[in-house]
Image (cartoon, rainbow, N blue to C red; front, side, top):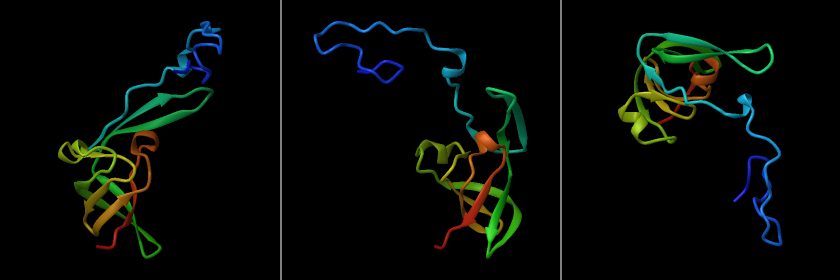
Length: 125
């Protein structure tokens, strides 16, 4: 077992290493944003420093790369999601998910929960 700094919790002699500090607020992490296929809803969250992230809570639009051109098309359905088999049934879009669009099946290349948009490339069947 390791502690939050990646070191072992016990010394070679068997003695216990006490953590030097508790976790900071920025080390806590958060719940995953499970982006669903529905009307577009976005949420802005503050990040460490002066940055911001746009989380897509739900979206029905995808930018699909077709022969070097980008087409904005509607997402119809989630066909496959290697992250979690239950995400297909719940229509949750994550990076790597295969979605059915107006121009055909496409694999998601962006992280909708981090960037707030769905970018995808067509998949040959």
